[in-house]
Image (cartoon, rainbow, N blue to C red; front, side, top):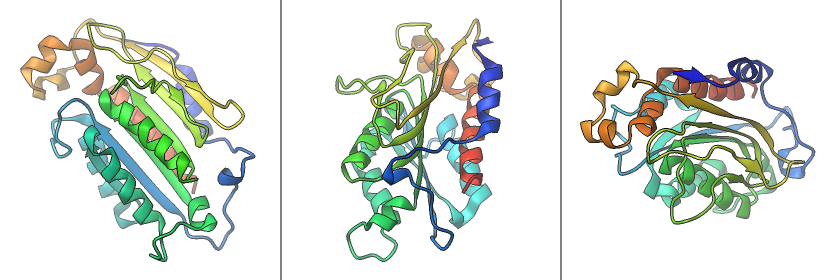
Length: 240
């Protein structure tokens, strides 16, 4: 396995998030209560509670680590609308059915996903943009377009975005993501992984995924990829 630009990614993990000058990304006042939310989406037809999959395992680790202080939930990629309703409910701290400017500005939302789950993460970011809600970070792992939408274009309400991908086999993700507005979104990088053989962790995955979609499955079960995803998320949470 070969990882492109690991040193650059390590520096990004240390550096943490960058600030933007737009209204929805203004720093919070000291007396404001933050709303830390981490939403993950599994790929394909995977169930959101299938613990064989790295996305589900990561969600469990984060929930165990942060407890009720951070909202963490994993969804199937077809549950994007349900995930959006959950996010808006969590942000509505006074439960009046509407999001105030202050409630929107308190949002610290991180979205991640693999395959169709990566597509769902960007779809959710676009929906939140329509509601005027900022997104702190999006992470796509071998994201595959769903319903013909180009999810390599990151909407302007996203502060930072990163892309992990591989190019082997018939199914593989975007090799490059780009910001629709460079003044609002920082692209942390597009990091390529190559697999000569699958990681040992893939033995827990269904045989048909390992045979039909070797590289696509390999990046999902690669602990090196998901440790970087986890570090990115934890670094951003700890900044708030």
